[in-house]
Length: 216
Image (cartoon, rainbow, N blue to C red; front, top):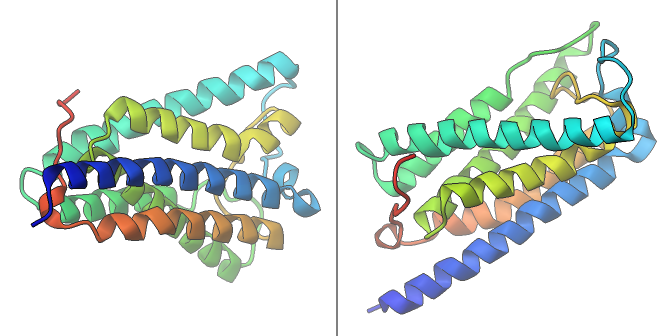
């Protein structure tokens, strides 16, 4: 019989490992996206007015923090707590991650006439990346983590992930669609690194998954 203390220690170790993998995924994607000038090319030509260095940092930090706050409150706050009322913890993790992935795979902000196959491939990869990320963030809550913790981790991931294009051009990419090898490499690397803690989370016994965070 597995002791409760052992389960708690295992979950704490997983949370630390998951946070490391999340940040490694962000760094890997950021580094790879810089190859061949991929980051500047991903930014919309209709970007806002030129910003100084301070303005670009404020735009990066403010937008990433706000996005993480809203998405976590919606997906890991309201939605997760609604789904867990009628589903098991593991099913809840997968369902909320799937909805999170669907929103990140929408074909928005596409300009010009990109190759349809490239659009489908990049959006599929982006959806897989978001699905793995959604599993990790939801599992953190079922493994003793807190909603403020997922907000902080989500914000840190986005800050590192988007730092290159925002600090270089002053604006965020207009779309998740990528059409260059560097962009695909960034998505693949991030997805694989996020899949490590996601797969491990799905192997936890159902009895070890519990939601202790009070509703926001």
